[in-house]
Length: 419
Image 1 (cartoon, rainbow, N blue to C red):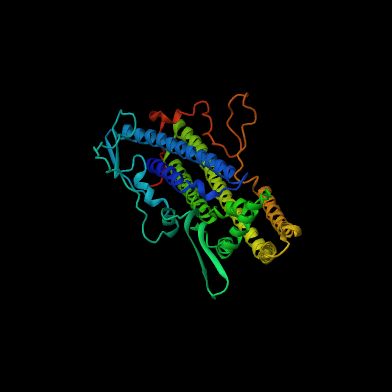
Image 2: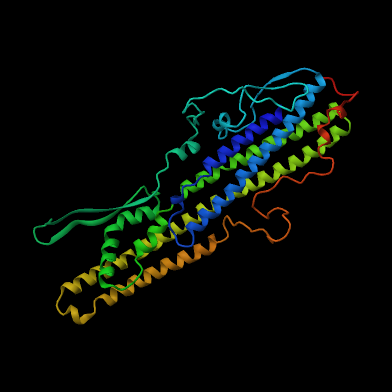
């Protein structure tokens, strides 16, 4: 019965990992050579973890079918056993009612072929179980209230006015707003100096220099990332790894108890099969923890790049403002056509962009091995399973591995402990 409950729980694990692991594409940002790769590799690795959860569910269902049928045949009566889903953590709990086969009891009859399906109850559209995240689980609840960074370009009425009665100023026109930011130093820097940077870029575009724009070509791509969203979702994947560990430990303990009560060739064959299943669950736990940690590393790297951009911004914004003001004063002054005023401005901008590109290059190199998916060693060879972090297949069946299904060879131990 415990294996049937495990099968339902692994079905819930698949739903849980598929839900919390669905990191929004926009959360990775729009960094060239970084964002697309991280999103693609994460999705590939996540797909492997989902396939493994299905394999674990199928194997537990097979064990449950076999053992309960053997019990019904041995007792010679129909068994109706209540379920008790007591092994799962607080993150997985809301997903358990969504697991395939979830119900209050299961039945099996002598001479049958395993567990009987739950009575089918016709459901109207919309009557399917709904995920309900309980109050107090803020980390899981946060996946339902994520706000991703976005830019919004608007055309506002252009106005000319004066605050002191002398110098005229302009406001309005085409401008860009940066919304739903992370609230970190990069977000703060962009909001503080947005007007200056956009004015600087407008001049660079007007000059037709072809120079990369500090905000629109570089900083904004990192600003669009959402490391907090990535980190939270990746860390929640750890709960699935914890469930694998918990259920594996429980199964190992119950296998030892089973050996106290039964003997014979079928019992021995089952022990070998169950030990292989336990080793497989350990592999799944390891793979799931790897995915969670790699996701958190990716979030940390994106945070590092954002912080580097912000630090460079605050360090050099004074020089940019000075160069911008100097250019405007030169253009408005006499003989500006002979003084080449844009040279000084472009020199400062070029230095600043070089600093930004160097910071980006270092972070690209650091992120190149994150969530790395190894290919099969040689595709033309026999299918021996993929390597590293691709889907881990269940171990190949050994000769006589199904011998445990022969109910006639399960013999009660004469010296078994008292129940």
